[in-house]
Image 1 (cartoon, rainbow, N blue to C red):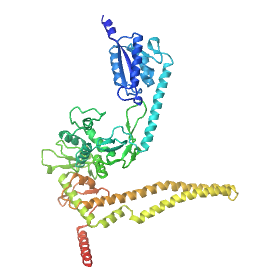
Image 2: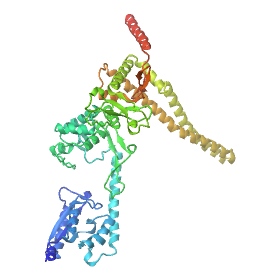
Image 3: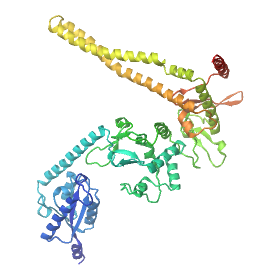
Image 4: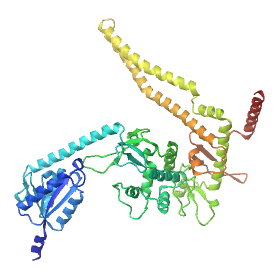
Length: 560
């Protein structure tokens, strides 16, 4: 009796599918056409309990389609008697999965499968030609994928953004869908996120603050302005997650660049996207308005490399991630607990904490580091502002540049190498002509050719190194100029901020303490961004130079 009731409950699924390539607004005409054909076939053949189900906008390569997955769940419960499609490709375009469905799953689940246009009916057995149809259906999907990929490559190489959805903070220009314009309310949130990161907060802390302040998440904001967002709404209102914040902080598009080919797929059957190495990205600078200036973005990336974990009390030091052990090279960890005041917070060698045989504690208090860094920066900034030309000359000499003279020499050397490569080609051609005319023997020609080709090969190997050296020289000179310009802007430094610390400090190397005459001494080397380790001249030297500088100014005033 129960079996009879179950048979009466079993349905005939009329299944339709349409890929995104043919998708139209809403339920497309093609879906409607499939529905009409399926319903007529079910009525003509008296198939019981017909139920129409469809997947609109889904590729046949994947089988994680909502309607198809529901069908398989019903089939596992024994509720599907028949599965009818218009043509065999509607079931899918992955020959391995389709083969398993026809030969194993549908047999096990007692499901009769019918493809109307291809004259397939498993009640009559599966023809040997069906696997060939599956192969051709898969080839069609692969060819379509190849065509789409070639179109996307062409667009991407032309600098057209490949992202379907603009990054949070931008919207598409109504007059040109390939151009982005700033979405001001969202851009303000992006700017706030970057500023919080610069101030020393990590993604988790930023997310908590945004949630506490009731800031709309990207998906909530898109829905609030009537934009259909593919991302699901958060489980709770304003529930920012650290992953979302981290993605925003990592996006180079916020400085005005278009970045294409960030990801790729290993196969047209795989929907999962894999990250490409950054050197394989295609970057087009200044293609749309910037929300974040490049200096701030670069600073944030530096901060992200020195990720700072808060202590159990939630305290984060502005120096976390910057201190290193001089002996074992490990980072110095940070300790600040509720058991003592913040003035007692300290850094310690993490290598020693893991293995006491590896190193020593290298204990140093945070307030000592703060005092040393503040005094070091004050001396450096004063020296740059007072002795700017001398400072620039000193640094250029440290880089081994000697400014314009050496740059000119490198340019001359590079031009000479390129010219010689061209001359060798001409000499080999002329030698060949002389040999053809009998003016040069074959043996002499062979010897001369080998010698010239060896010289040419060495020059071609040297040219990239010369170009890299020249580029590095120009980059260092440019970076030094930016460093000096920024140092000039800070006229009075009385307190350290996270922005100042990470803008000027590259790393702080702490040596183990030593006892000298019963007193504790500890070497701390501060390495600055761009210029590296810098040691101020002796106080006596500075005083003499300052007096000479002052007298020169007074003399200039009198003569003027």
